[in-house]
Length: 287
Image (tube, rainbow, N blue to C red; front, side, top):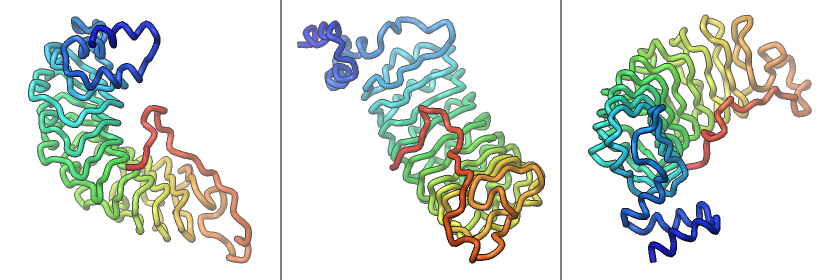
């Protein structure tokens, strides 16, 4: 049966074939899904994205010098403890899988700089995430987060946080401790007010609160590091005031910060609406 399915590759069945093979727990089928992965690649990168994997291939754990591991767009919901052997790993992509909780073994990979967790089913993050003190970029967009876990505030080197398309109502006050944070993406959440903590983060360069429920914006003119604020698709009656040279994307962005008269707003204003510049393979999707 297995041999027949494996030979069917010559008929270019592609992803459909992989999906069928993924259900068969045999070593031959796993080798087919992995392709020619007998030894660690010279570039120290393994990309197993879109392979219909339902379990992590243990063979990869023998590549002790691996630096980049991409497991995006599979059917994974857990990871083996043997993953801890990959102590040189700097980039780990687990987005577009079926994780309901972050496997704790990920928190043992202390050299991680970039962690992709978007488009899963995460409702929280474990306290053990604080062990990843080298983490600079964290993607948790398109999950089921109703709050931003406090543990994120302990990632002292974090520069970029993508938390869009969740169900966030507020942000923790401890976020102001992340003095290396430069970019925060919060589009597609449930923010009814502009998060007060962001007003105390003068080092922020990009703030994205597009597609929330914010009705009024405070002045952001006192934030010296700010370069871009995206506030479009909010039911706001004013644009945030910003310092000279700061780009705004949203209603009234190219006018004076406050609308002149309500009578002048009888027709729909033109906007400079623009989605954040996300990589094509990281576009947020609904939970």
